[in-house]
Amino acid sequence: MKLFLGVDGGQSGTTVAIGDETGLVCGVGEAGPSNHVGGAEGRDKLQRAVRAGLRRAAERARLDTANLTFESACFGMSGGPDDKEAILAAAVRTAHLLVTTDAAVALAGATRNGQGIVVIAGTGSMALGRNGVAVARSGGWGYVYGDEGGAFDIVRQAVRAALRMEEHWGPDTALRAVLLEATQAASVNQMLHWFYNPAWERARVAALAPLVDRAANEGDAVASRVMNQAAQQLAELAAAVRARLWLPNDAVEVAYAGGVFGSRMLLERFRVLVELEAGNRAMAPRQPAYLGALLEAYRVAGVSVELRGP
Image (tube, rainbow, N blue to C red):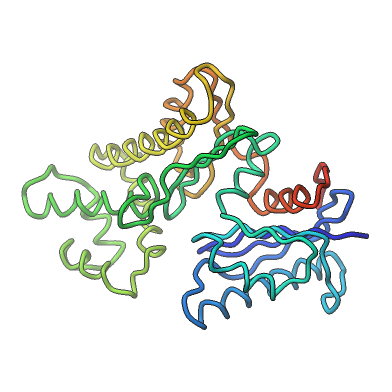
């Protein structure tokens, strides 16, 4: 029985899926983050995460982890594939290896036949589209120059609003009190300086985004503007990809993925804006990214299946 491997690796964790030649998902395993490989420590972390996830998936599939060999494997990696391919080739025995981006595997699982657009908004943000002939992306420039609409950017905009209030050149907002309570800072200025400290890594700052959403839902006008602006920017990422790949009125599935879309306010605004374009249909992903990676593993090997289970 030939086996296939799909891996979704990112800054929040790594998910591994093993499938057989019939499309049955035999086992799924989870492990720690695997997004950065700078220096020996980063490379070791990547290998540990992949091997731990693989071991757990193999155990659930009741496979012998000592002699595990795959017909094909696909890794969708946050932070890009270029610096990870050699490391992953050494970590897994496979006849065919594809190392690509986390966005590519998210799209592969999110839409019918892997065609359409996926907008991803977690800590950062980006959009990726594929029409069967070409691929286009927008955003994903990182937290310094981009990631508009992502969780880190939502918190950044909230901090700016709180600073304006504190310095008396912006409107009053509940965001100041909310953020100070969450961080136990004495002032927004102090909190801002804490956020420059390595102890407050981007993911930790981004984790405060639900507080902005809560303030918006409780009627704070400034927080509402922050959330609606994020929805607008994410819809613009989708529109930029659409304009490059499809004609007006073409039918296009636009999937959304990532923790930011857990905000009902943001999601509903995003849906409305996306579907203003004739032919667009905003939708939840059909399948998670790790199953998109597994589908890509089958595709690379020239195998067409419908996934089943586990």
